[in-house]
Image 1 (cartoon, rainbow, N blue to C red):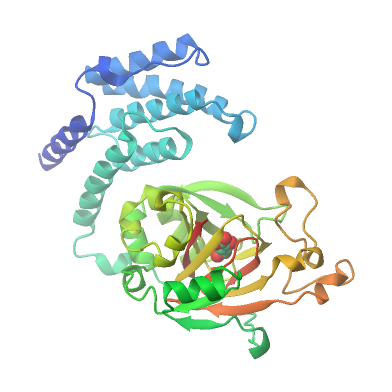
Image 2 (cartoon, rainbow, N blue to C red):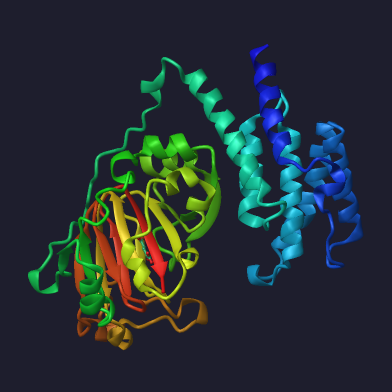
Length: 406
Ligand SMILES: O=C(O)CCC(=O)C(=O)O
């Protein structure tokens, strides 16, 4: 009885996000999309509105399989947006069709996440509205099934083994400031493009007190996210996969699988607005010329030992440390020749040298390159000027947030 009540309240909320009639679904596509697929989309829409949910799920699966092929042919930038819209509609119809008592909300959430990651915005970002509702109901159901059993779910993280803990030298240490004024930061660090660690500027961020594996699993555990597998993206064995945050934490953080998994992505905060509420854009970003919407926020969540090989990015960066510590080494753009950038276009911003263990025979100039370094701890922000080479290795389970701005 309770389940039936819960399902009808969920369905009422979902219905409120949907257009009033199937005619308002706006199922119009350019000639790039085969008419047979447009027909199936209309059919799935009609099945949904006439509450034939199982049939709607079946039709949506065909649409999704077909669109998936289109999304995975050629390079991502050449994928036509119309096919991404098709994928989003297929995801929407399938997710809503799955919302019956017999199906799990978890699967519907996964379908929406896939739509968000691979699709394009439709119907005023309806997938975000739908997933928020699904997640709310999923969390309520999960909490009530866990009642009285909370301690058993606590994520226990193995102690840090820190095989190689760097010793900082005074001469190479990145300077630190305590809450500098905007003008001081601009004149002494932004304009001359010098790295600096800012202390005391993010002390008020709620994430510093709130974020832990338990909390991240509580707010995002059921969400599907892209994860990088392998110790560094320059390795041949490196790959990417999709998995839920719960599975990522269990496999790579709590149980520390033999390979390394890194949740390094820019969509996490759009996918999970709850996490975004716990951080703020640093005031210093207003010194840039871009608008706030142009700032990219990246999440970097992984176990001890994740490495981002030496590389540079095309924007200014504030790398904020929230959980755990990271060893970071910076080389100025003047050292580019000495750090041996890869020759391929795709990796031209990445060095061939493993800077903590350099092959000086093959890369002798690396010994000439001067660098600055630090161990970034929770509550600190590192300013990495545009085009500065940076190498990052986490010393603990770590969560950082970076802001790319111009
Ligand atoms: O924290 C990391 O592993 C890499 C950070 C980074 O490369 C960036 O913020 O641009």
